[in-house]
Every structure is written in structure tokens, then in C-alpha cells.
Image 1 (cartoon, rainbow, N blue to C red):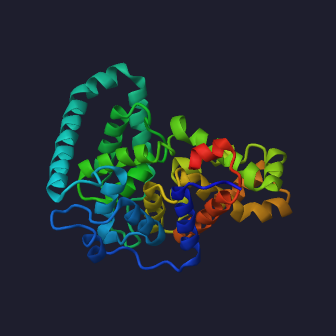
Image 2: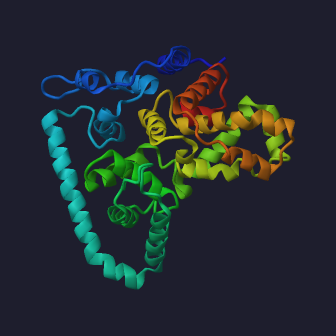
Image 3: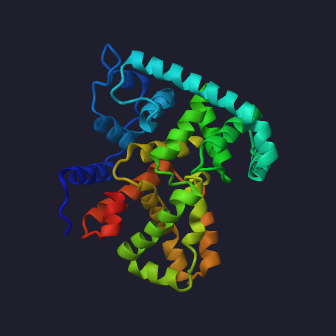
Amino acid sequence: MTTLSPENSLSARWSASFILVRRKPPIDKTEWDGFFDENGHLAKSRDFICVNILERGLHPFVRTEAWKFLTGYYSWQSSRDERLTVDSTRRKNYKVLCEMYEKIQPLLENLHRNFIETRNHIAYDLQKLYDKDPLGNVLIDKKRLEKILLLSYVCNIQAEYQQGFHEMVMLFQLMVEHDHETFWLFQFFLQKTEHSCVINVGVGKNLDMLNNLINFLDPLFAEHLKGKGAGAVQSLFPWFCLCFQRAFKSFDDVWRLWEVLLTGKPCRNFQVLVAYSMLQMVREQVLQESMTGDDILLACNSLIDLDADELISSACMVYAELMQNEVPQPLKDFFL
């Protein structure tokens, strides 16, 4: 039996609480404002707020401001005046980056074939992106989105641009009012989630740890995946690249999961426990029908219109189960 540190023991109790207790209403504007004193300093602890976000979620009216804390756009220790200064600085820095980009764009077009290919790739992805709501109202400005994606590509050597980023940035554009907020929130989101959705940084590690988790918690399923299901888990990289965006029935569900990932609760790299929980949804079908790799992938891709709260609850149950066992060092280092 693993000896839990006080922090991990507390996290286990939080996850158990989340599982057993019906979710309370999300944190609304009145409650959120009550977390601050007269100078705009947080009067509640970061852990208190993050646990409440895990267990309850955020009302849409407070999501934008709360995400600025969760991503690191704002410091948790900042005052109201300091946050106004941060906003001004972020806006100015974004303007400087845009001006820099405009100056070097001709050079990039002439000397860097990858830039032309990436720009064409972004344009193609945006062309396919559906930008209207069910009533036909335009939701986003694709030109603004293209500018942010190109700037992100030029400024971010590690993350570059990959298919799916246009969908992720669209969700940030829907959440905030200004382009500089969209740009910085996306950059901070990538960093805060340890680039877990970036192919050349975090996706491979996530898939390896998902394999390790299956081997540890479900040896029977692991044995099947090693045989007939060979390669099935590695083929699930779109789950991580898109941060599960296409698995949900609404944008609110996507935001609900993403804000939990940003809290770091109940543990680090919670996205892998989410992926494990999704795999468990098709487990019985895979074993009963003795599915091969392609069929397993097809079954996994059919997991759409999921409920974020139910998936988070299932992943918390996996975490609680993990905490009851003697966890191998690689998993311990990854999650704890």
C-alpha cells in the first residue's frame, strides 16, 4: 500500500468527494467576487478555488477572469491594480509582436518554405472550420484567428503549428473579447498543460504513460492491446492533440474539462486519466468482440457527445484507485 503524503491524501479525499457528492452549482459571479478583498487580492487560497473548480466548475460569466488566473496570465497574488497593469502590458506586447511579424513576413515568405506551407495549412484548416451557430450567426472572425495562429507559429518554436490548433484557438476567441487575450491565453494554456497536446513535446509521453497505466491497472486489457490491439493506443494521439475537444457534445463541456486540467487537481497530467477512462468505455466491447487495432480505433472514435462531468468523475475514480496501490515510480513521477 502506498504511503500518501498529506497533500496526496487530501487530493484522494477531494476526488472521492467529487465522486460521491452530487455536483453543486458552478461558481457564479457573486461567489467569485466574494473570493477577493477590497483591494482585489484573493481572500481564499489557490487550492480552495481550484478544488471548487474541480468539483463544481465555473459559470460562463466568470470563466474569462478565472482562466486568466488558472493559466498564469494573472498572478494568484496580484491586486486589482496590478492586474490592470498586466492587461496593459499584455496588450502592448502583443502589438509589438504583431509589428515585428509584419516586418519579417516578407523575409519569411522568401527564405522559409515551412512558413509558406504552414500558412497554407492554417488557411485550409480555417476554410473547413464551421463558424456559425445553429441559428446561422457567425461566431468567430477567421481573419483574426488566422493572424493569431500565424503569430503563435512564428513565436513558438516548441509548439509550431499542428492540425487542431485552429479549433483550440477558436474556443479561446469565443471566450474573450480581445485578440491579445486570445493569443496569450493560448500560449499560457500550452505551457500550463506542459505542452501535453503538442505532438513533438507531450503527446508521445502521454501515450507512453497511458500504456503504463493500462498495464498497471488493467493487465487483462493490456494483454489484449499488446496482441490483437497492437498500435491502438498509439493511434489515439488525436485525443491529446485536440485535448479531447471532439469528444464532447458542447463547447461548455470542453471548457469544463480544460479548466479542470488547468487546476492541476486532483493530480498532475490528469489528461491521461481522462484518456484511460474513455478507453474503459469501450473495454467490454473490445474484449467480447476480440477487436483488432483498427476496430478498437473505430470504437474509440465513436466516443462523442460525452458529458464532461461524468468523464471527470470517472477519471477521479481512476485516480482514487491509483492511490490505493503501490504505484510504480514512472507513474508516481508523472502523476504525483
